[in-house]
Image 1 (cartoon, rainbow, N blue to C red):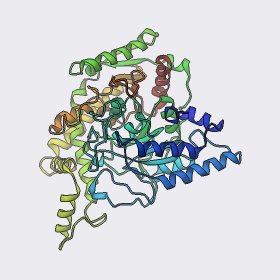
Image 2 (cartoon, helix red, strand yellow):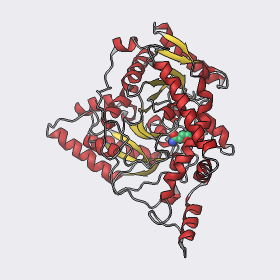
Image 3 (spheres, rainbow, N blue to C red):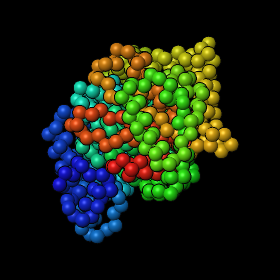
Length: 484
Ligand code: GLN
């Protein structure tokens, strides 16, 4: 049986039917990871832990204990999420010998579900990037074309799922880092509402934008993992206190009632021709099935990218101040405190974190704060107001917004590394969602088979705050319509 072709749901069913054991499935994945090094999604693997967990699941099954949908499911975890007593690098040399002292809340939750953690996936250093080329460890390749990037920063997680190295994965998304790699690799990526999932134990990039979310083969799988990781957490004051219901079930009637808004600003040129054609195909699937599709306007979209590239570095520069060689590892011998800082940060951070720390401290510095940071916060409010109008019943009154996920398909390795601004442009359709804290879901336009030579394209569904149910339900409708 080809275990790597399964979804969470079919894996669960096969495990219950004893078609294989959790241990056999885990061994299968580790064999695949060690034998095929063409993609290299992982920074480290967790073989001992994973096998112990799989054995425990097999014992539960043998004892007739009740097990949930995620029991024994092999998952890959982005290497900026803490798993107790295991290495966590955030893709940076500054943390290369660091071990996590505790579990992230999402890990605690998935442990309770008896998930098997295969390993930690590659990412752009501190999640800064759109291609995973900024990792200080190695380059991860796109399983659909090994000359191309998997996207980023959760490129390792997306490539792991697309390449059959893991059944599902966790990523983090500050400006598109789950959705853009999902689009490039032909998998599903969910960035939940800000506050829906605890950020405790996620190495912070920009705290007002970061969210942990899922990468998976199907929308339904993302919903299953999302249901397991969501919920309030006393360790994260920004996590939302309201419990909200399960999302992992399909409801055709309510899907059909959703009104879809299509913002004209996301279709105003600059998109790669092949991407645009695929996006229009996806939109047509909704139109021809009788969905109400409305043209809407989000007029401040044009300010989103510049706004993001002020707020994100500002917050990142503060968050990264903790890596000073005192609280975390010191990489160099030094005589004085300033020398410890200089040497550790000078050699420990790569170019992108340095660029963003400089940018961030500049926009926060006295004399420039009002001109840049305060202005960006005002623009953020205008962008939020646009979305409010789109969803308000008295205004456009749509339930879900449909957009492309990225303006292009996966680009070639090395194509954009010398030009940070062109790299930043690949986030143009994803950053507004983070600035406003809404949930966003990237779905492949169709099933893209690795080896077919086709490069995937994903579209994005944006929902109201804490209405993941809507975008997941509509996504499940779509994948049923076009075939999972
Ligand atoms: N690519 C974006 C950036 O470089 C988004 C990163 C992210 O979402 N972590 O900031």
